[in-house]
Amino acid sequence: MGHVAGALLVAVAVALEVEIPPSTSEAAPTYGLKPVQSEADLRICGAQSVRRKQLSGKYIRGVGVEIGAKHTPLPVDRRGNRVIYVDHKDDAGLAAQFGAAPAGRERLHVDVVDDGAALRKFANSSLDFVIANHVLEHLPCALCALAAWARVLKPGGIIFAAIPSMRHTFDKDRAGPTPLAHHLADLGDPARVARSFLEHAMEPHVKEAAGLPGARMTRDQAAAFLATPAAPGLHLHTFTPESIFELVVGAATRAGVPVAQLAASRANPTECVAIIQVTRANSNSGAV
Image 1 (spheres, rainbow, N blue to C red):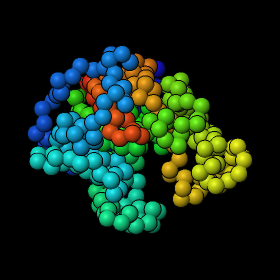
Image 2 (cartoon, rainbow, N blue to C red):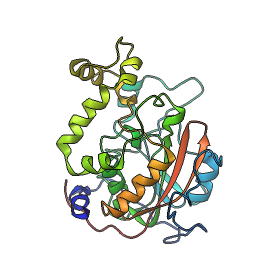
Image 3 (tube, rainbow, N blue to C red):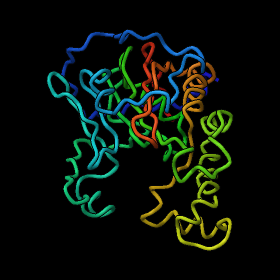
């Protein structure tokens, strides 16, 4: 299925808008860890609690991006490191969509307006890290995003992804985590992704969140909900620590995305942080 992933790796824009300064980080750091080989090797979330800041200090080095940080950026040591903040709208657009930041918080300035799931404005192998906290669960195609993030990262680069653990969130009553077969089917069929988006919006927990009675949305109700300001909060996919690991293994073995999971840890009671490393250069930049 590697050829499918190749077809979906996002092409670099003809005129790249982001100039990346030279990085002082070493190529392909090992961090003293071997890639996770099985679920038995995985540090399952809940067995160990390490805060985001501690994980950031260990894994975030060089120059990279954070997607959708808004008013809750990952703490990063700025000595020798640089974070470029990416969002789907500029400062004014985010303020119009989400309103003012909560009291005591300040929304970050958006450095680059880009699709965080594709990062088209960034060249192949140009970054040392991609931070995507509470992003994957909102994306129609999680594997497409992993492939795009791997494309822009150098060998040894890090994907730092905090993901809600469905057992401890409002997703706990859903049937289960999104299976790998679903992710693989999304990767190969953009039309299915559009259908899947609507199907997810029809699920009972979304109807409850929208304040509507009954067990399940109709298609018309779901379509109307997707046009509201609350829609960006919809979890299109759900995860457990085990299913995150399965997704990364599936990305590498079934979809040809050069990634391996180094570690996972519980950052707080409701989320798991997955540390994913790019294992080799990804030179395929075929257009979608």
